Amino acid sequence: MKVKIFNNILPLSFSLLCLLFTISSLQAQGIRMHYEEMTDAERDDLMAAYFTSGGPSGTSGLVANIANFHQANFSTIHFNNINDDVFFAWHRQASQELERELKNLSGNEWVVIPYWNWSLSPLKSDDLWQSNWIGPFNTPWNLNRLASSGTNMNLASQVATALTQTNFFQFSRFDVEGSAIHVNGHIWTGGTMSSGNSPKDPAFFFHHNMVDKIWADWYAIHDDPNVADNYYVQTSLPKYPTVDPDDLNDPRSLGIFYADAGLAVLDKYTVSNTFTGSEKFGYQFEIESGDDFLVPSGNDAEFRSCENIVLKPGFLATSGSKFLARIDQDCAFNTASVVSNDPASTRKEEPTANPLMEESFFAARSFPNPFDHTTTIQFSTKSDIALSIEIVSLTGQRIALLRENETFSAGVHQIEYDASDLPKGLYLCNLRDANGFTNHIKLLKQ
Ligand SMILES: [Cu+2]
Image (cartoon, rainbow, N blue to C red):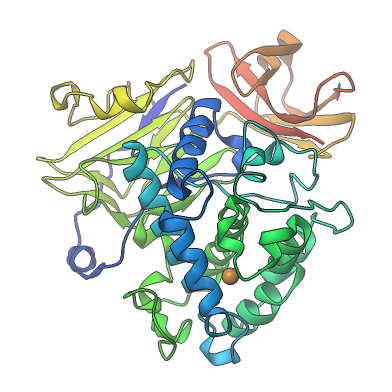
């Protein structure tokens, strides 16, 4: 649990000031994560807001409007001629608008729609379909889900291959939209999800945020700063509703960040408070920010984590801005109503925790991961070091203490962990030295 602050801060550049005034689309700032990475409180807030957004039968409000538009304009926004593929852009915009609506309905700016990484959670028995998550929508919203186990949802290798595609239109139209990566989530869920009315099912936005994350990953890898963004998405198709698809290419410029495997990186974004008094970025695992993440004077942003917040070169909260970085090891953040009533006087203009400069003292991983029964935890140390190694649940409860203050010599070490008795789900393996510095590995038991 530490905030690291680096002092080498870049000046606010002219080009980023320009960016501030050219973003006109609706934004829904936040960190989106695999749904299993949400805390119970984050999940409960989201589900409560989501039920409200569609009314008791799911036939009114923004969810219904998006579904109606999606159905009426289906052939315009899907499976188009290769050079006009607006598929990604339309779905990104729809998801942002709903997320914005959920924040408004709940009065809770921390609410985000997570993504369903079906490769990690490919089963009907996974949490997503249970009563705490979107299971209860099925009957009252008349969704007729099948959640068929006959369709393979572990598409990790196919995603990896798609990300190597260098041609955007090939990637968009064929490697994602027309392939199992996009199609299987609809078919597997079935019912409304496999119809033109699919946005009526909350699974639609969980699935499409995964599709959107894949686009974000692709863009981060392949974007050529020397090529105009309208190379990627062209504007000859009808715009929905008033947004230029070219403005949607880089999710970071919209304030959308995708966390992955315990890490959220916030960069290339200028806080503008266009829609909210304070822009909120929450993730229970590690948040790192730098590389032109700016909070200009007069603006207000807040980070919160249950673990680490790392501020790197290129992060800048200027004099006259409000910036709060909050860490709660117990993950006991205030509920929505308390947060929104948080008096401005308690905010500080500087990060609240102590600056520490230490870097990770070892590298760690586990394999296989995800795993069925047993996984091997591997780590390397640069010098002799005493470590405690424990397995904890996402709520911080210790499940196993594998090593206690044991000295390891410099080199690579492996520890086998037998988790046969553990319910399936996401866990953390913490490796902690005598000074309290911790590295963690996320373990997914399937
Ligand atoms: Cu669609």
